[in-house]
Image (cartoon, rainbow, N blue to C red; front, side, top):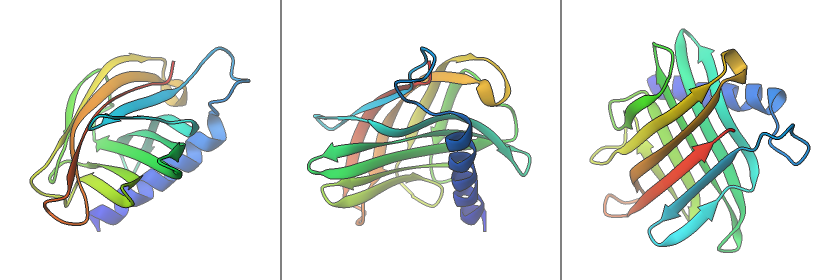
Length: 166
């Protein structure tokens, strides 16, 4: 049930932010970005970038999502959502098997990798370094680092990345 709520939060966050904020060349000077290293390989979102907050069932949710349209010849996507009862501000957070949050990275070596609720033995550190604005116009800058787990327990990848919505 808890996992279902997280997926609902992710879906609602994507819908809300895709309607309210678009990251494209016509944006008024604001650019959003998500970049990371997957091991030694660079990854950068070039489509569908959404970075923002929502409130669902009394939980504050940070969503960071985007796609790389040509990562090793395929479209790879990254999604991170972190939830807590208090407003999300600058600080250090952890996504692990007991936190309210999850990250997924698809189409890396033909596999999907996960970290967060229900995924044991790994974690992802999230540091929000800057926040400005209020409500659905709030902007974020931060970084993340850790491991995601693939289809088998031995299948893990390390990621180090950054994101910004201004």
